[in-house]
Image (tube, rainbow, N blue to C red):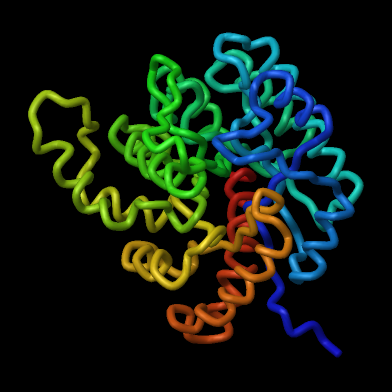
Length: 338
């Protein structure tokens, strides 16, 4: 009997190589972002989860806290980053039809990031890169990252953005309600913050060949799109790029941005997002193993129930689950040849 579960491409799944787990534990991240533990992970368990949900391919990335574990220790970050990227590339080699790789960069170390970016694309054949919403208080639009964005733009790269705990420039983690793990809601706030920062600093305007994947249906972005794009330049003497206005922001969200459905996009988030984004820019994400396999299955079941509310036809649902991702990768490959 044919599998009745929709085929999926998972652009938001994580991996934790053994060496990465040890580095996290040794450097104060055994309970990252207020979560009680680092989840267990191995290839066999990942493939079982994927098979159970008819996920044909998973794109692996390192989740929060990322690879730059100690402020100021760039050498450790470069070591952790290289180890993780090589482990992800090994998974691709062993199972080329089942795994892709969003390579990590050791930001805020720009020199190390440029070197790792070249190695990841040219030697490891990474499918794109993952960056976190901030690293030690440096948000993605910070001017020190211009050289990295320029290289990503030159390579017409896909950039998978993943949230982490908010942080000030004094490297103080923003945890206003410390009794609650930050991933519950603070991650959504930081996702929204970094997207606004990318627009306000002109990063989106200056580097038009970068394609962004934003997780969790955009976090808290939809309700504030009109507000930040309209009010930013109406207040004198604040540094907002001249490109920012509602028409520009909304046009870029429709062209340069994709959004995954990891977490709980139904019943509220995704309909709000679709007021600004077309259905061909929605992708599937599991967030495994930080979302345990059993919860991933429950969320996927709920998704199947709610999807027809916004994706009326079977073809539209197939787009969100799989064919949008296939088209994105085809278009990226074609763009790189030009």
